[in-house]
Image (cartoon, rainbow, N blue to C red; front, side, top):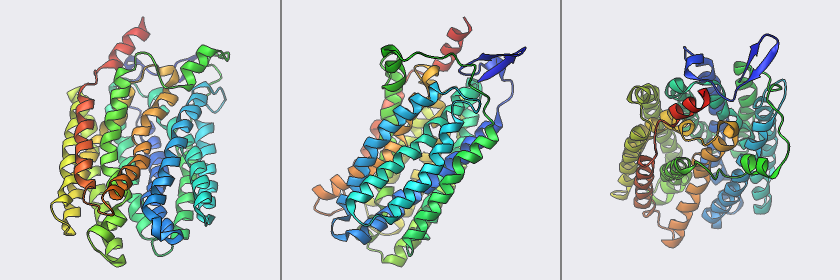
Length: 434
């Protein structure tokens, strides 16, 4: 952020506790609404409308094509997070470092989703869906960086909870909305595109990011390239523990969410009306339980002075929830899954971004590094279907194996998080104050 000293702007990458006595609630509101408006539409398409469109285009290979789309998207999203995040960290403009990118991303997401909607062949779907990932991640990484730029460490649990409130509604509410368009998939995809269009502008209007022209210019050198455009190499052990731990926990739920339409039809044996009903019920349960926990878990995390313990508890709840349908294919087993996994993911989302900020190797490359860490969220939305498809293919069409494998992933992820060294934000402040 920038502050004025007389008429000369002084540049700061972040805010110290001493400079921010009150929690910046508007930053939480802006990022929460921004997350709701990109994540909800994305998951409404990715988890519901994309599988339905694939089934219309090539029903005989639907699981394989969904996995192909997920694989291509994962590669593109990874590169986009790094490159766009890196350029955002270096952007000097009167609108700030983040605002130009979230605006471009919002417009581009609408255009590329409309293109995907018109695609009638597998190659064209792969290309348009991959382009959509580029613009979507132009929203994601810079939006998250507002938390690093403008929120002091002591407030990050609380602000992360506000962010999580919007994120959770998007996480599950998007699927509820998407399910209403199963009878008209094309219209649903366009509606999701127009909702995404609002994400960047709404967040930008609330934040009103200060100018970044006071930020020192950086010459393009090899060292600058290494710092701003590749995965962090130094002081990054906790960064990677958090990245892979959270990705495993997320993958455990997204593997089921991404294939829940097929699970309900081929494993639970529901007809189209039943599928639509249970997608809505499960998503609503996931959303309500997650909202309840997300509101309370962030402030509790601040009082505990711990992020990793709540995340480990969340992983345990997710593991129990996702394995439950393995014991019976009765439809109510998916409701039990929704209840337990929802409680776990509510805790997880509430402290997720606070944990991310605590393990950043360098505040000067916050957007790039947060973009990489966000692969634990967006990347798992892509990785989950790949894991599920591999299990289903190996089992010759059976969906049973998804449940124990995903439970194991959640537990492994929770254990990795336990090895994170906490309170790095305090150390960073001490070094910055010297």
